[in-house]
Amino acid sequence: MVSARPAQPIPVPPSDDDSPWLSSQQAAAMLGVQRASLYAYVSRGLLQAHRQPGLRGHVYARIDVQRLARQRQTVRNPAQLARSTLDWGTPVLRSAITQVAQGQLYYRGRDALQWAQHASLEDTAALLLGQPIAAEPDSARRAPPTAAPKAAAAQSLPQPRPPEQVLRAWHRLPAHDPNLAQPGWPRPLLQQMLGVLTGLPSSDKAQPAAERLIHQQLAALWQVDAVGENTLRQALVLCADHELNASSFAARVVASTGASLHASLGAGLAALTGPLHGGMTAVIDQHWDDWHAARRSSEALPPSLAQLLADTRIHGSPHYCAGFGHPLYPAGDPRSQRLLSLLPADTQRHALLAAVHHHTGLHPSLDYALVAIQRGLGLPAGAAFVLFALGRTAGWLAHALEQRDSGQLIRPRAQYVGLPAEADAQAEAPATTDTSAGRIPGRIIRF
Image (tube, rainbow, N blue to C red; front, side):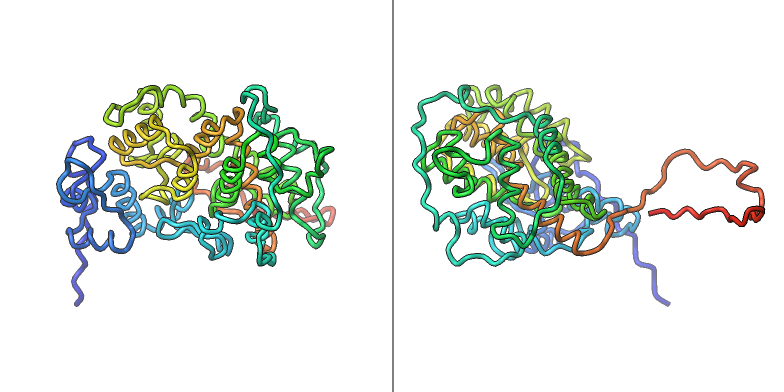
């Protein structure tokens, strides 16, 4: 006779301490495991160990330990596991486009950060779409145009369109599927998105837009020098795709119905405008001056940021929509780290990042880095959203086509939690067939 396996204890917080950091003993207690298992989680990359000044030994971010505890519980509960797939849970779709593994980002097997050092958005779109990649990337083949000297204030530059206007402008464009075999595809679609986001015409008198790369057109529009142009290029590349994010999933759902690529891109763009996705850049920009005003790294967090971080916690885990933290990157988002490293040193920004990490254990998100680029390069308000949406267009195209090629209609089931069904007389009556006119009741097919 096989003895019943003892039930695993439900992980509980070891104390009421509100510190963002846990000792190894506290972390193991929260997970309901021995410390040897805790160290095994660290060695397997499931948990990040930190060193904090003034704290003895290794410590662990409370939010990371809570996330791992929830994951362990869902594995033992099939129903809960199914529900968790829509909230940073188990992968639900097969894709060969982008991988996030061990805190790193890969585009079709290529390290995205290494790729971003030399590639353009056009190169990246071709890579994500599985097109042949030239031995020498576009950014190396084409000499960048001479950027206009930066003599104008950001307020006098052409202003990016607000997200609501972008959506209306996109849906006013003719809806048709392009010829996927035409030379240079998908550049025309990228150019369309550039025009919708910024109001740029398809060409100018000095140089046809089609002969210049996307980042070169933005550099000329926003009057940045060669260093700033390189920053814009890398930002576009690192925004190009990020696995099954909300906007890419929306694009896939629409594409799975057989809708056009134009409609699929519109779905991605609509999802991106939400404040929990690309729209968070506007929230960060709104609070930027307050968060960075004359700070020292040891100070408490600005009240508005502390409140925003508190409001966006879900069961103890940040929703990463306050400019800090990301569930897939407990040690920090490599995209934001790269982009922030391209900007001139800023003591106030450095002080805020140090204070946030000290008080919460969180690192800056991609949204924060994009707003830092907007502020650091003196770009017009809304430029961060332009970079995000324009870069992500490449990923939406790849996901839409991959989903279309799969032939699968995305249609998950819902777990009903409303009022119980009423057992009325009609439901209890025997089924009948109407043959008086040679008809039978039609069947309802649910998809």
